[in-house]
Image (cartoon, rainbow, N blue to C red; front, side):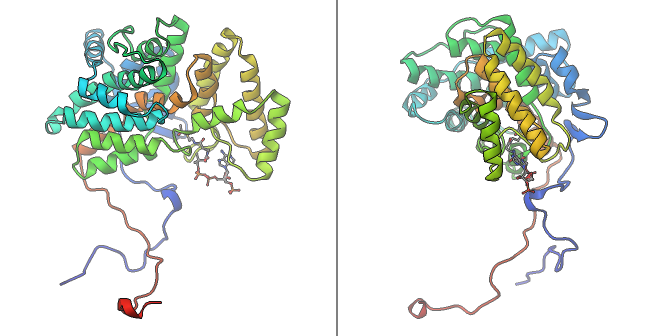
Amino acid sequence: MSHASNRPNSPSSGPRAGLDGVLAGETRLSTVGVTGVGLTYLGYSIEDLSEHATFEEVAYLLLYGHLPTAAELRSFRDRIVANRPIPSALCEVLERIPGRAHPMDVLRTATSMLGTLEPEQGPSDALRVSERLLGVMPSMLLYWYRFHQSGQRIDPTVGGSSIAEQFLWLLHGGPPEALQVRAMDVSLILYAEHEWNASTFTARVVASTLSDFYSAITAAIGALRGPLHGGANEAAMELIDRMQDPDHAEKTLLEMLIKKEKIMGFGHRVYKACDPRSDIIQRWSHKLCSATDRMLLYEISERIESVMRREKNIFPNLDFYSASMYRSLGIPTPMFTPIFVLSRLSGWSAHILEQRANNRLIRPLAEYVGPEMRPWVPIEQRS
Ligand code: ACO
């Protein structure tokens, strides 16, 4: 049998830890950190989108490749709202998942379960599945949450006409204020898409095997969960919660930095000078903290930022000021990363479609660093 392969015998350059700086493919969905361009979704700047668009418009843009007309947007929103109901078998599963589970695990399990109840019927079904998930994901999350918090079986179909409004409505059990809805909507826009980040790459790897849509999304949720990626917004909140005031925050941060601890919500693999999403969410955090009498939280956050800039020259990423803003919206900390899912679902879906449209199995190489070739040792001779 021949073992001939494409593997280079002596690679010209060694592996890049964490694939840092490796160009792994093409995308037309977003630019991240391109000099003079920054973050764009299909050519629209994140500043324009967060100022003028709604999350549903952005999700439509990502899925369909163009901004919707008024009629297209109306119809898209109607379809998302119509996709809110949860199948009864899935309600039963959500009731049986422990109330102490992490909500990211709930979303991962619920997405997988939905894939057994309503499987993707071939590649032409992908857009239907992505719209279904956009509609039902907040329902699944908050059905589970409210059932275990208060024993209530909520009706997830109520809750206004947008995902932002529905999330806050179902969470708090009543209609949110317009300012809160807009803050939530902006946050969803900022989280929607970010090129070949870890969870998107995961989704594309799964899609590249010609697996189904639900498998790709379930895997992406798993990748997003970790604190080096989406889980950083929860970890940032836990850090801020430990601080009594800005001076205490400064002292604690300095101690942490001496111990070489990582400060969650800071730094980025691709951005080198700033995360353009951070300025936007920081303004919203200020607005919401001041509207809800939580300025201490904001001042502590600001002090942490200034210590990080002064001591390490490291800037906050989107996750850092998202934490104080979500707190000002009355959102429990374990819900922070799940909100990222509700939004990034749009980016993941667009990437799965893009991968499928020009697919080649994603299968890189690894440099072997294990033992030299050695003879087989029968079991009775092993020590
Ligand atoms: N706190 C303290 N030091 C940091 C931080 C941080 N948050 N981020 C980077 N550094 C330091 C590292 O200690 C390292 O220093 P050294 O060279 O002296 O050892 C150097 O900067 C490079 O750090 P790496 O972790 O190697 O950078 P990498 O590109 O691999 O990581 C990452 C990027 C994972 C985002 C990193 O900055 C980090 O761990 N940040 C905290 C987690 C976080 O906020 N994740 C959210 C990412 S954005 C998002 O998902 C929306």
